[in-house]
Each structure stands twice: as structure tokens, then as C-alpha cells.
Length: 102
Image (cartoon, rainbow, N blue to C red; front, side):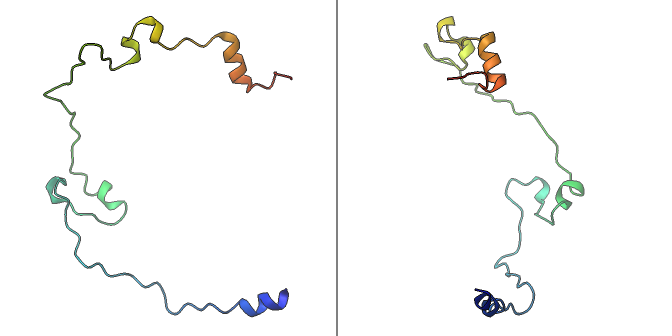
């Protein structure tokens, strides 16, 4: 076993350092990039090039539910809502069921 590992130990040899793959095209800005910002090195784009601003989105055509449609479970009648967790169920969840012995 040791003779085999000694033989196979130095069979793979890497020549030279890392071989960078050339890009076939130069980096260009994304069509929606603010002010034509192009990608740069890691960390530079967020610290140096922070020329963007955050704006809230306003939908001009909000979707309204039709008759019989609901967007949230809280809008449904009481019988379709989630039941609250009982105290003994919460104790079983917290303990991980360790108290149950079969």
C-alpha cells in the first residue's frame, strides 16, 4: 500500500502559475446601469462608485382583487384563518418532544 502511494505521489505536475482566460470582449455597462457604471474589482463598485440613489416604487395600476379573491389569509372569513397555537402545543414545540415517552 505504501509503495503504491509513493509511486503515485508525484505523478501530477503543474507547469507555470495560473493561466488567466482572456475575455473575448471588453466589459461594458449594463443597459440599466446608472450613469453607465461598468463592473470593476470586488469592493470598489460599492465604496467608490456609490452614485446611485434608492427610490421607492409606485405602481400606477394597482391590482384589485375580483369577487371571491383574497390577497391575504387575514382577509378571509374566520373559519379559513390559521388557528392559534395552544399552550401545551407550544410547550411540546419548545421541548422538542423530549417529554413524550412511548
